[in-house]
Amino acid sequence: MSLIASDHFRIVVGLGKSGMSLVRFLASRGVSFAVADTRENPPELATLRRDYPQVDVRCGELDVEFLCRADELYVSPGLALATPALQAAAARGVKLSGDIDLFARKAKAPIVAISGSNAKSTVTTLVGEMAAAAGKRVAVGGNLGTPALDLLSDDIELYVMELSSFQLETTNDLGAEVATVLNISEDHMDRYSGLPAYHLAKHRIFRGARQVVFNRQDALTRPLMGEGLPCWSFGLSVPDFKAFGLREEQGEKYLAFEFQNLMPVRELKIRGAHNQANALAALALGHAVGLPFDAMLSSLRTFAGLEHRCQWVRELDGVSYYNDSKATNVGAALAAIEGLGSDMDGKLILIAGGDGKGADFSGLRDSVAKHCRAVVFMGRDSGLIADALGDAVPQIRATSLDDAIAQSRAQARPGDAVLLSPACASFDMFENYEERGHLFARAVEALA
Image: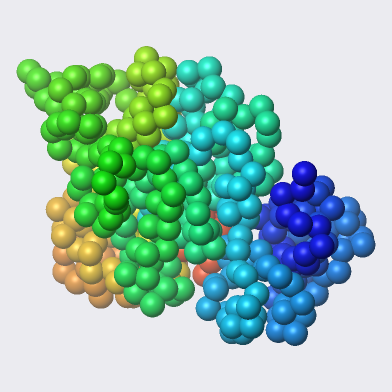
C-alpha cells in the first residue's frame, strides 16, 4: 500500500540532495508531484530532467498560486520556513513538511537521532561503526552522507541519523528510539531570531522519542520530559547512575559507565577532551539501543576521527598541524581549542576567519587567552573576531590560506600545534569547508 494517498498533489521545494531523494521516493510510489526551486539552475536539475522528464519543475522566484495547488510542500532544509511564499501557502492551509517526516513514517527499524551545534557527524559515524561491529545491519545518514529516504530498506535493523536544525524545523513526530542534542551554542544566527529559536528547532528531535541522551555539562541539551521516559547522560565529570563519564585511578583516566571503568582514555585514537565527550555520547546512545560494550569499545579503539574535524595532518619541526575546517561556528572552534589545548604541553597557533554568519565571537576570548600563542586571521569577518579577542594574544593578518600557514609556522615552537579552526563558514573564500580543509592539508604537506 502506498505511503501517501495517490490522489493528493505534493510539491518538492528545493532541488538539492534531499530534494532529489524526495523525487525518487515519490516517483517510485506513483505519487502526483511537482518541483520548485528558488534558483534558476539548482544542483540536481539536469538529473531530474534526464530521469524524470515528465515532472513539472519551476525555477526562480516561488509562485504562491502554484504552491497552493499542493496539499503538502516538502521543503528543503536549505530554505527557511520564514520565506514569504511558504508562509503565504501555509496561511492558506498548505501543510509544510520535509523528508525526515516521510522517512520516520516509513522506517521499520529503530532510529538513533543525533543533533547538536557541533560533533554530530563524529558521534553519528561512531555509533554507526559500533552497530556494525555488533553485527547489526545499520544505515547511517541524514544530514551526513546519504539522504534519509535513500536509506529506507526492509533489511535494515538500525538507523543512525544526523539531523540539522534546518531538517528538524519540518519534522513533527520523529519517534526515535533514542534522541540526543549533544550541545547547543550559537550557530546560523543569520537564519534564527536568536538562540531561543535555534534551541527550539533542535529540541524538535525529542518529539515522540522513547529514550533520551543529554549532556550533563550543557543544560540546554536536556529536554523537558514526561515521567518515566528512560534518560541517560554523558559528560566529562565522574558518572553516577545511568551516566557515562570520566574516572581517574592511580593517575590513569578512564571512560566509565556508572561505577565501572570501561577503557583507558589513552587508548582512544581521537585526541582532546571534546573527543572524549564524543566517545561518551556514542557509548550512551549505543547502550540505549542495546549494543554490547565489547563491540562499542573495539570501535572506539580503532576510530581515527573524520576528515576536517580536528584531523591530525602531520608533524613538522616538532609542531603538529590539525585540520578542523568543519568548525564553522564559535562553539565548534571553542571545543577544538579547549579540547586540544588542555591535552598538550605546548600552545596553539589558531587560524580563524571567514563568513561569521552573524555570530558573537566574544566567547572565544578566554579560551584563546589560555591556550593560544597567537591567532592568524583571514577572510571577510576576521576583523570582527580580532575586535572580540582584543589583546588576549598577538594577532596576525594573513592575505590567503597559504600566507596564514606560513605566518603560523613562523610563530610556532616545538611542542605547539597549528590549528585551522575558523569559527566561520568558508563561502567568502572557498567553495565549502571541505575545499578549505583539503587546501590546508595539501599546503601543510607541501611544507615538508
